[in-house]
Structure formats: C-alpha cells, structure tokens
Amino acid sequence: MKKLIYTLIIISMASVLSAQNSVSFYSLKAKTIDNQEFDFSTLKGKKVLIVNTASKCGFTPQYEQLQEIHKKYGGENFVILGFPSNDFARQEPGNEEQIKSFCQVNYGVTFQMMSKVSVKGSDQHAVYKWLTGKNKNGKMDSKVKWNFQKYLIDEKGQLIEMYPSNVKPNDDKIISWIKS
Image (tube, rainbow, N blue to C red; front, side):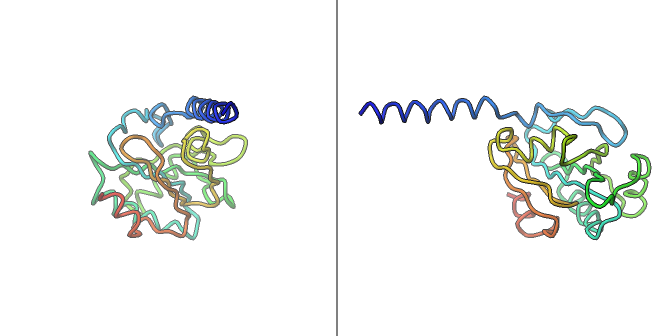
C-alpha cells in the first residue's frame, strides 16, 4: 500500500512539474517582417497555422496555397503566421524587405509574415522552441526538418499537430481542422 501511495505521489509531482515547465502560447512574442512587435496574446480565440518559409525552395509554391487559405478562412477565427528562415540549404538569403517583396510580387501574400528567424539550432527563436519542445508546448517534441513545415494551434493556444513540408497547406486534414 505504501508503495502505491509513493508511486501516486511521484506521478502527481511529475505532472505538476511538467505543467510548471510548459509555457503559454499566448506569452510568446515575435517581430513582424515590418519590424513591429507581435504579441501572441492577440491570437486568443483563433486557430493558428505557423509555417517556416523560404523563397528558393522546391516547396516555395506552397505560398500560393497558404494565400488561398488565408483569403478563404483568414480573419477573426483563423490566422497564418509565416516565419522566413535560412536554416535549410540557405534557401532564404534575402533580408526582410526582399522577402516581403518576393512574397507580394510572386504570390500576393497578405497573411502575416514575420521577421526572418532560426527555427533550429542554438539560436532557435522562442516560438520554435515552444513549437518543438514538449516541455514548453505540453503536447510533443518535434524537429523542424525542412522549409514549409506546418504547426497547428487551436483557439485555446494548444499545439494540435505538426505536418511536414510535403503535406500541402490545402490538404484535407488541414482544411477540415480549420473548418471544424
């Protein structure tokens, strides 16, 4: 009986410690591509798709699908945040102004683009530390493996799912989630 009680206490303490380590999605901040502070607390009540982007990648045409989704579903209930990154094969060499121009001229991007960040490594941005660390997001560990990896966050700021680059933004699984 004592052994059972000790086991339950240890499990209970582990859960409390785990909950203490997790970080609220809404406590995060990042800079927009226009160098403005973006407070994630403004996303409360919205579904969010976060994607790391690059302008010289085989997956770059996904910008078009992301923009279509933004036009169709974006607004009060759904937001896309694009985070340019040069972490994979140097496929995003431009500065913020060049990236912004590329996105607008080639894909008509109007969804929220963020400042260029590192999505992996020792200088990984806090948003990506949250997305990839179970100790922060409370859901799962993951690694960003390439450009255009997608993360879905629900209206309560909970990480729901991660989809790799080869899953298109307009995949039925993603659209169904947005519409649900």
